[in-house]
Image 1 (cartoon, rainbow, N blue to C red):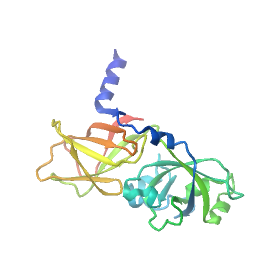
Image 2 (cartoon, rainbow, N blue to C red):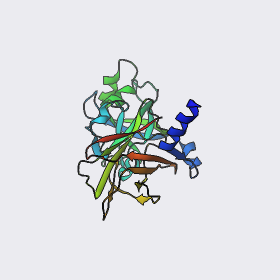
Image 3 (tube, rainbow, N blue to C red):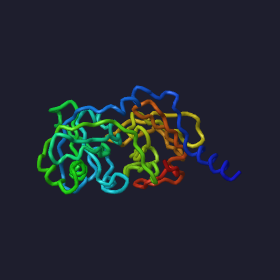
Length: 256
């Protein structure tokens, strides 16, 4: 009985709908494709401090842990590629381990257009593609031809988070969404206020920041419906509570 009640509570916090799930997108996760790769920032760093997705210093902390990348236009997708997870591996250099390394798109590389797909990896992620002891040798190559594939995002022990922008007010809400499981990236967000049954479309502000500029006062708590690239939706009820504050981060309360 206790187990049933716990699960009932969890389902009331978060529900997942797969009715519009794009199977062809899932199949493409398993396909290796060619891409170009460079690296930027400190050799053992996270590239930049947060970058164009708005994740700030969380890129250096678990679960990202500096295994991140800036994406060329085909990966960054004007910010809608933020949070997508990929595996990358190299085979063209003597220092390559040929083992896949998982990275998350957290930044933009607008000038990375030499190839149709390009990863500007953090120094940490680029070096991780090397055999043991040869990370510096691989980074010295500077530019590589690699293989990549899309993979589902999995954040064990972490909950999806919603960081309210410091400029939010009773009439304007902007939120950064991090650690979405599965697709990782978000192509649409809808918001439901208080006890209302109506969903209102939010607009992408920039990167992983989504906003709603209301003509009247917003009524908390706010539930959020997130749609990923595959079409799968995640509904997080009461994601942002009554009494919310600008600059605060709120967790979904559910671990994936």
